[in-house]
Image (cartoon, rainbow, N blue to C red; front, side, top):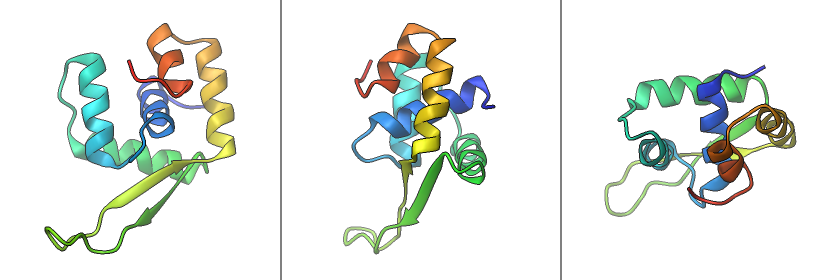
Length: 102
């Protein structure tokens, strides 16, 4: 079972072409109009990964800054959990879950 916030994060991972913490935070800010700290995003991502709903990997160092970026991908179990959430959810969540931006 996922929390409401975890459902939004899961939907963002499902929707975004380049899902990493900053793009997830931007997507959620665009929907809710509130800034969310990266720590909150990473904690939700960690819980989702612990449940097997998403996987993560580190990119090679980026040429412009030389740092790695952690990327995320939704798994089948995550899609199932998201579908269940959408059944009981709100229209914006359904829009994100179906791969369309709000």
